[in-house]
Amino acid sequence: MLIQTAPRIRSSEITPRSVYLNRRRFLSGSLGFGAVLASAPLAEAKFSGLKESPFNTTEPETPYKVVTSYNNYYEFGTSKDQPVKYAGTLQTRPWAVQVEGEVSKPQTLDIDAILKLAPLEERIYRHRCVEGWSIVVPWVGYSLSEILRRVEPTSKAKFVAFQSFYNAKQMPLGRYAGIQLPYVEGLRLDEAMNPLTLLCVGLYGDILPNQNGAPVRIVIPWKYGFKSIKSIVKIKLVDKQPPSTWNIENSHEYGFYSNVNPQVDHPRWSQATERRLGDFFKRPTLMFNGYGDQVASMYTGMDLRKYF
Image (tube, rainbow, N blue to C red; front, side):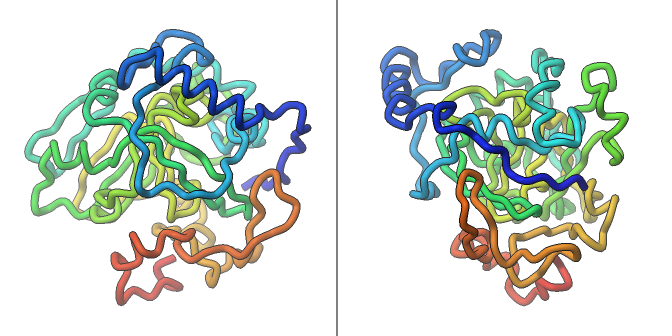
C-alpha cells in the first residue's frame, strides 16, 4: 500500500466555518426535506431538512477541501491526490444496488429509492485510517439496518458481503491498482445491523463527490477506513465469512474485523497514536475509535489480537 503524508492546505483555501454554516441555513430554508438535485453539478446538489444524529461527535470537523482531495480510491489512482483528479469519469446515474442472498425479500434499489427509504441524518463521525491519519466528517445517510430489515434476513444469514462498482473504461487507472477489482468487503450481520453502520449518500450537506464514493457507500466509524467500501452495487447476505479485498491481498497486515485498536500494531508501524489531518501534533488512538459504548459488546469474549 502506498503511504503518503497529509497534504499541506493553505488557510486561504479553507472555507471559514461561519460561511459554511450560513450556507447550510440558507439551504434549509430554500429546499424541502430530502431534496437533492442529483443531475446538477456538485455545487448545486444539496440535501436539506437533515436530522441531527445522537451519535455525533463534538470534535471540530475536518475542512471540506481536505476530505474531498485526500482520498484512498485505488480505481482512480494509488496516490491520495489522484482520485479528485480522475474520478470525474465515474457515471453515477443510473445506479442500482442489488440486495440478495439469504433473504426472504431480495430487492434491487435504484439511487432514488435509496434516498427515499428512510429519513436522512447528518452524522458527524470521527475516522481512523490504518496509515495513521484521522478525520472528522459530517456524513449524510441512515443506518444500513433500514435496508437489511426490509429484505428480511433468513436464519442462515450470518454475514453481509459488499461489492463496489468497477468498470475499466470509467476507471482506467484500476489496471494499476495492484489489487483485485471489483473491491469487496464484509461485516458480521450484527455489525452491519448496528445503528452506527451508515448507508451514506452525502457529506457536508452535499451529495457524495465521486472521489468519496458516490453515489452510495458504507461508513463504519469504529473500524479502519478501508472497511468503509465505496460506490457499492451489491449487498449479499451469506452464511460464511465473505472475502474482503485487503485481507485477500495481505491477511498478515489486514484482518477481516479491522477494528481500531491501539494495542494491535500494523506490522510496519504503530497504531498507538494518530494525526488528525490539519493538525501538527499526534493524539492517542482510542479503542474502537471512541465508539466502544456502542460496539464493544459485540466482541465480548473475543481475542481481539487474534481476530484483528
